[in-house]
Image (cartoon, rainbow, N blue to C red; front, side, top):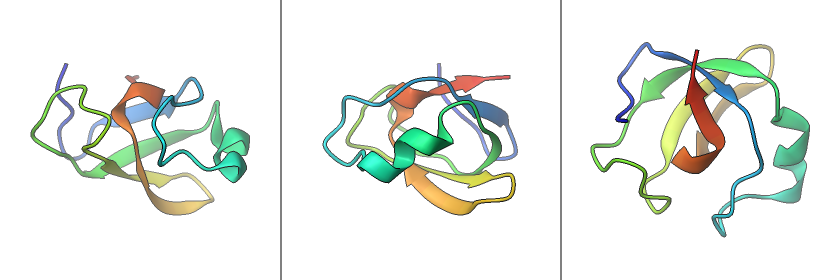
Length: 68
């Protein structure tokens, strides 16, 4: 699945990517909107910019996201 700008997503699990930081564990379960998608599908090296409700904007690995 490829993500697109404006798509609503949820952080549903901890990522296995090395860019995942321990503080991001508190974001599991939050919803957000894709701000800047990447073109590679399910490539953890390609981070997606997501605006999380009440938390700000973060670049997150694709393996932690699912479409709402």
